[in-house]
Amino acid sequence: MHRILIVDDEQNVLNALRRELQGEYLVETYAKPDEALEHSRHTLFDLVIADYQMPDMNGIQFLKQFGKLQPDAARLMLSGEADFDAVAGTINETHIYRFIGKPWDSAELAATLAQALVHRTTLLENLRLAELCRKERHWQRAQDPNKLYQVLVVDDEPNVLSAVTRDLTARERFDDLHAALLHAADPESPVAHHDFRFNVHTATSPVQALERAKQVGYDVVISDYLMPEMDGLRFLDAIRQIQPDAARILFSGHADKDVLVNAINDSEIYGYIGKPWREHELKNTVSQAVAYSNLLRENRHLAELMSN
Image (cartoon, rainbow, N blue to C red; front, side):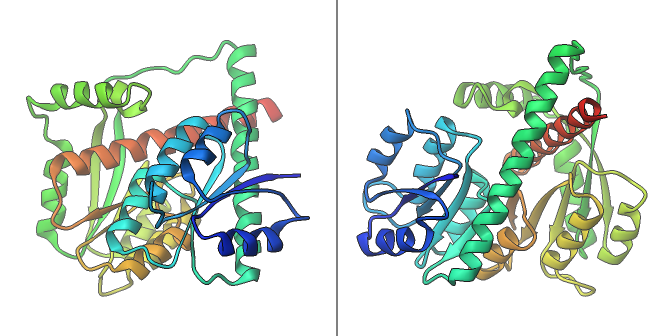
């Protein structure tokens, strides 16, 4: 039976969730996030649900610390009060699987938990088989410092496409310093150990971009939200059907909280970049997305080798 951790400072919320989930899952609840973190040092969970608005530690801070203790657990955010900045921070800093609003719909909650656990099980099985393949076949990743990772940027404004391309492909004298700072901040981050280089493809038409995606494989797809032919969420969801391994990033200066929540729950985006953007934040977000998508792709490939 799957073990679930729920953290919320409202006892009535903890009681309600426990009533709904107990029996289907092993449920443990905590009103204080620091106590939940301490407990998580010696108890493994398959999934965690954290409230955003808590007095001593908000949900983002909790999930970041929990993720370092148990990176394989599925993470969900629960909130009725989170604002735009909170949801954006949740996307970029914790990479949650889903956002659950308060009050929640019981059927949707049950379906979300089931989907999250199936997704987690698939990732863990791929990881197990991939590690077995690496061990048995002495497989080692070929490090190519000159590899170009493929990035697709879709925006109906040509000047935006030019600026993003410039920022992602320019080699500045401060890049080595930036990489060193990333390593100092988080030595275990894959971005801190890799100087990613990008080959940027651009399109002003999401329809044409979808046709191109049937022929060209991408590591990362970045999409504007407001576009004439279709909005960015529809486009990213369509991309997900064509290239499920490509990390998806929403790019907008007009998105609101509801758009971001839908981007998490429906389009399963990896990150969000606001307009106007800072060059180093753009590069860092895309680099993290590349590292994430490549690891998933590699693990799945090695798992398939072991299964055949």
